Image (cartoon, rainbow, N blue to C red):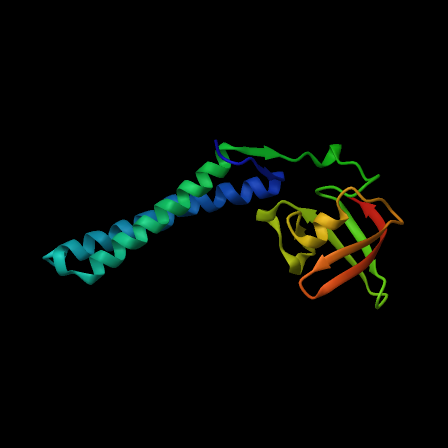
Length: 157
């Protein structure tokens, strides 16, 4: 049995769009490349044919991974998210106790993480350290560069 994939409605839409693009754009393009390589004659020593077949194999594998995720997806309902303690889909404002810098992150499923948008995966050390904590809690989180001392300022949606 495959692993359950947790997504927001937006994440599910993006995953379906990615699969659709692979099936309707990428797959036909590779099929065309294979056809063109076959037309050039002997495929036993045709580098273009070999490259196109390799690309086709990688594309099919990528599609299978996405289809597996879609088959085991669970949608996270933001309306049922609690803000009394840190959990997935919460927007958490934290203060670094060492330098007084304040940061805000939204904890999301790994597939929806985007640091530039302030979305970090629940699989990161910081998110794991924050999970289950409440406003005012002080958290010590081990990161590759040492220990991060954080205070939870606010939890919202």
